[in-house]
Image: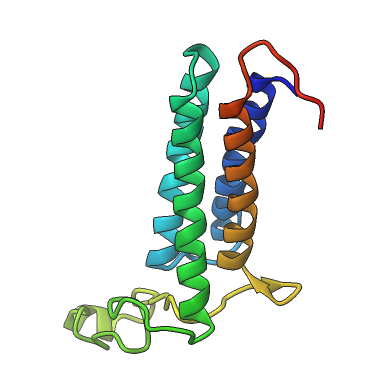
Length: 159
């Protein structure tokens, strides 16, 4: 595979994961705060990928790897919060401030704000939550970014 093909694969993977997150949101799975945190590094990886296709060197692919590692790390942290392995931020977990952030109008509204808790698994597949899948796939993307960074432009590595 060529360097540019690996960059396309890695950045495209982030685009697919980000698109999947928006699709789940569209079909009725609103994101919690930690889910939103996981989206930003994917967006950065997409921009880095576009730049890395036109700017030679290893720095941008390594930055792409850092972006993938960041969202993967947040995914691991989020998974731990969901599984009660450790405490999460009080702003979006059961240990949060309760009704403190809601106004009287919010509390009286028939359709008030939907509070999405970070410590609740809203969807899972093969016993892995969305955060877990994000972590697993993001670390795979990180590996692709690293291989792209170590591949010389124009060369083809055979595995």
